[in-house]
Image 1 (cartoon, rainbow, N blue to C red):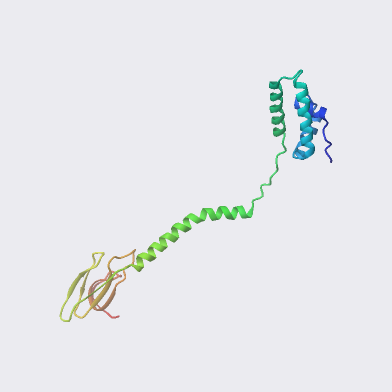
Image 2: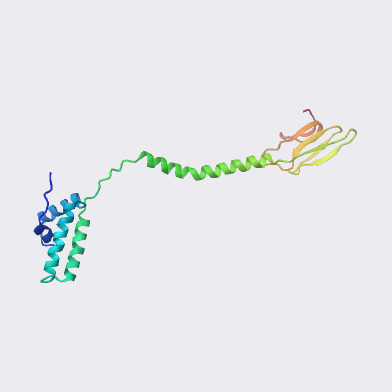
Length: 188
């Protein structure tokens, strides 16, 4: 359905809020469809010229200003609302999920990097008991170990996490991971 162009009289009556609902509807629909066209600019310019001619006689500048504000408000308030569907946009959902997951991913990556750096910087201590000697050693977690003659122990300067990695050769006395205490012959 084609919207016919409103006449100058229809536009003028709409401008001063003296038009019928049918004419108001016609003017509003036409402006929403053709508001940026040259034809609309010419129509508004002709209304402006009419107002200037009437300005010298019956209409004050304040009334024209008030009419213009009402004209603007009526056009904006009767603007057709876009009916956007509530259908989710897949790309938008992927963006949101990525934004939510990026912070925990960065934190976890930093934690793993820190742990890896910490493991690479482990200083290993090697202690031996010479032949005919028994040596008492206290590990970083305050566990005591006795090394028998000719035995060697290698342990980290600091234990990281719950794991205690220790290397023995020879015979030792002290607790083992199973909680037993006694002399054990451990070979490399």
